[in-house]
Image (cartoon, rainbow, N blue to C red):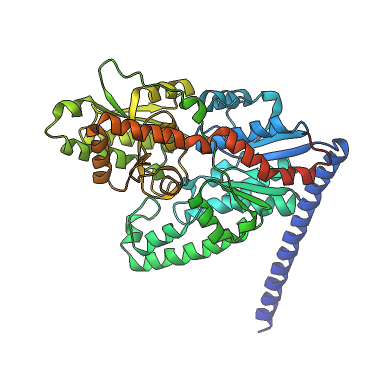
Length: 487
């Protein structure tokens, strides 16, 4: 009995000691980081360091366009702002990163205007590291990555442009930074929970879970608990920007800070693309263009399935089918994306579509312009796409868009009402095929009417509109940290 009491006392003492050690460690780190910011404030009294937390800044997707347009407009507006970008692209030089931003997005930023803080823990936010409880694993991993970023350089203002809400408390409480975020897509949403409840097979709901009622119940409980934790973290932000009506609705439901939440549509290169003219192809091909990263949620297999269904609709028009080409343009962030793209090529062969499908990987901005000039139809298949920059840019370039009837395309971008139609919306492969067939057999005047209306509708998504809205939202945080603002 005495031995048991002694063991209990030892365990209790260890727990108390560990708790005090953790608290002491947190206060020590906080003190060091605050001291670093105070020292800088004395030496550079008028300088505001704005840190962009974007571990994949060299990925070449829509999120990276937001990053570099935001960096450019801050540098243009404020002379006393110094930009810091936290990146996990440790093998890439600053010059190469900025060169890719120029080639991919036509956004020019000078190397002298940006400091890159290289992070070595990016693997902790990779989905492959967490085969189970992936959302929680990646979110806790982002905190570990955020700690590395905060330790290496505590900013005055932190702007997370990748959706890592779990980093907000790190920067707010440990470094004393003002915290903002640009949310492209909520980490969890009501639709995800409903899909699990309905036991629907999806890229984030594996077959063995969807078939098992007990595992489904476990996942529902896990999602609900994670949603509460996600909301708790998100509320630590001072200001939040969201990229669409769909995202705004979900973030308001989860984070419940509507007065701090602002809709800022992402920047789309509409001014240059509206000048694009169709030049056609020497062999009179009809090009259907898909633009998007090779990520699982983009659902590229659905595009191949749609082409397979389209072939059956054109069974009596073999000549037309032989003229069709689906050109899939996308960027690969890492080996998983490369493997995914290779699997797509294998699937196209399995469906006997290899003569009608072409893949273009990591193209430059100029090469993308050439793709726009030769295409007539745009294709986008992601379910609940948060916004859809590539959809807007296809419309601006004069392509007739067929997008998924959900998320941003449904709520913000594509109008299907007669008289004001700007494109088509579909859900499954058969519906996509029917929409494409409709465009192919439409009168020339009808297609021109849709194309003209689409091009006229995209000005609200321009880079200039983004810059104006972004500066309006972020200005209060810059001004709080700066005694004098450059006008």
